[in-house]
Length: 340
Image (cartoon, rainbow, N blue to C red; front, top):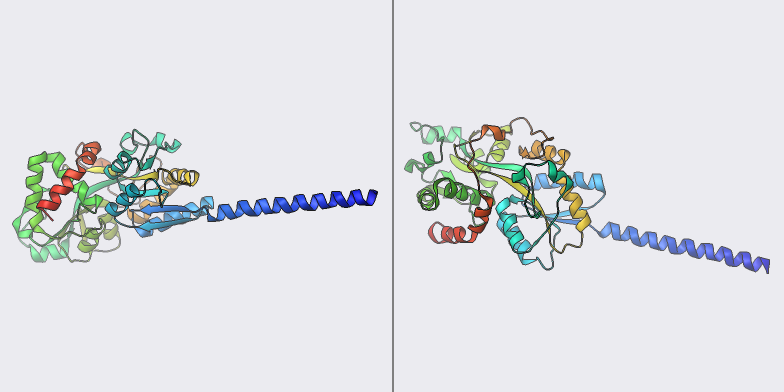
């Protein structure tokens, strides 16, 4: 009898241990397959470096799809009831506002956002800025000197309207690129609706190429395929640091906005998504991104890499991001009908 009791107790211990091992294995399996999925508008190199560091710090695996702003924002809105990704990484604030208005974004107010400037934080908590975006004129000095030896380099937006520049300017397509849409809004808001469109319709015939990617102008200027272009200043600074013959001009009354991050509504991976937002707002992540892409961090504790143009050196318009969002469909329709 006593032997039977010991046997039963031993079997219970083995059974309990076996069940515990099964439960632990089940948890481990769940953790392994729970990967964070990101739609990324920022460059692939930066996305890879940031997600690698995030995985290293948290153990959460990440996959991402890199594409243009227009394509990914449309995906986010179309997939809002059954999102195929958890995070939208990058893109100017007006695009995140658009997605939020369509009910596609989750509200999340990170503790780190309390330390950020007000322009980098959505009032409704649906997006947060992680770096400052500013527009400027890029010049390939060698090509420019050959093509226009008697014309001073442009210093203002109006200087780009010189008819001599026909075919020598590169500007992205605002239907696909948040960079170009920010440029369009820059002109509409600094000049007013009618005068702004007069400017844009005068400039567009001079443009030699309208690529879809916001990173294209800096590259095409750097490689000497065009003399001039409109680009984010940080993209121009990056090519200059890499040894390309690029000069950056920050015109008066340029525009400043923020690259944003947001979480998809109805995500099944909310906890990991929130951790990634916290990570992107951290000093470590923003300094890493600046070291690769010459961006200006919004975290006051983070320092931009040498060569970054400080916001204090820029003459910025009072940019209305809500107006830019509200006008987006109307502006892009007019652009498609009258420009491209």
